[in-house]
Length: 89
Image 1 (cartoon, one colour):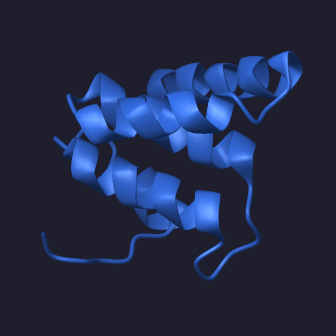
Image 2: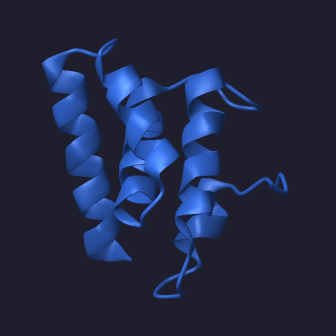
Image 3: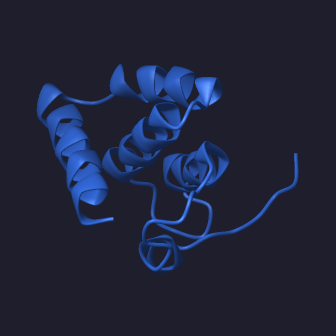
């Protein structure tokens, strides 16, 4: 699979375009390992959640794994952010 970099701001400008789950998956990886950004498990969970919703099975597995390392409040916040992202895009 090709590797590509996408910033949150670039995703935000995609609007209603049909963005593949792979783009969201890459953002999840970026935030989970801190690739060019400070590691942020809430953001990683959000992006993995969005990728899983678009059919990326690997994202669902990663989301489950990092959820085990997060508090219930952090998971709830990540889910809230994912719903908000869907609502605004």
